[in-house]
Image (cartoon, rainbow, N blue to C red; front, side):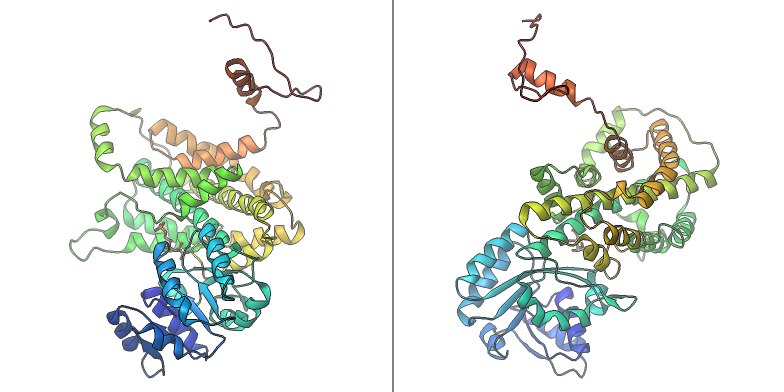
Length: 464
Ligand code: 6PG
């Protein structure tokens, strides 16, 4: 393992717990010391000398990289390359951009070195006790590391949350979309919190109870579970709840934005994820928001209806919008798989996301079984079972969006989710007018709905 930060250290311990001999390297001797301290009576080889590390490994070597994505990965590869031999395998387990992974695969192949992009999800505790692992690369090479990855991964009903996903950068692509969905779900949950806190005037104890209850029902998922915990956490520095002391300005390392960028490039609509990225950006405009608050008024309406009804509508609204968020991510994977020739099996992806990762939820059981019936489905919303769930919960999300509009509480991801549903189920959309406008001002031409061909009209330019 190269890179002994928290994730790297925890993965080393996890691998070692499963009977594999493992060596750890980090340039920073302090990180090496931390691993030594955590390793107890394990017989781990650790060093901060790269050559010593490489020489300690039996060829062909299997080396996992867990260093920050970006140029550090290239720097490590450059230092490492002269020390490696043909048939050695490098597995980049960080959140690298999939196009970087493609470049690295090509570069290293020139020296006969194999390179795999491997997404790992589950945070610190996932790494230590069982993450969801998303490997891509050459299938025959994957076979050598499959037993090790299967043993350290999370398990759902004894099935390991890892499987080979596809060639090239497939693993990193799938991990990127996982993170895009993660952004969407987190934004939706925070909008529900906003409504409960402001419209429903609930305190943190009540919020803890609501989210705990939700986690026992149809919203059962890791993110709902940790949200319930968060509301129960007290601050160590004051006597307040910790959540109330945290600045409302969200950070990001970029994977959500990459998902949106690639979806835009492929022209696949994923509005909830796009909105989630924009809302993190908007949250960081804290000073501008505070200034605008002094000037711009909202509707001044207060929600006075039954709190219990609000909670119940919101539960269904979240269910509805979470389904459409997974649907958007899965649809992106469907089209990206064709464009990049990954040949992804979406059933397998839903399956390995059921445990270990940040977006694990009981909804993924339904999504997995949908793809087991229709492996090439471009959008799960048209599946009979899933469509039924959306139709049943749509009244609630319409009610919630109405309350948000009336009270002036921003719920863009919930709105985006509903608009996505309404647009996707519209056989006719007003895009004919957009085409007419394009042809009017730019002679961009249009197609007709009654005959084949491309048309241009000499419009009545009355205003010119
Ligand atoms: C995971 C997480 C992990 C990390 C995100 C955070 O699957 O374990 O997605 O990869 O927490 O990169 O991303 P942001 O910093 O962009 O929120």
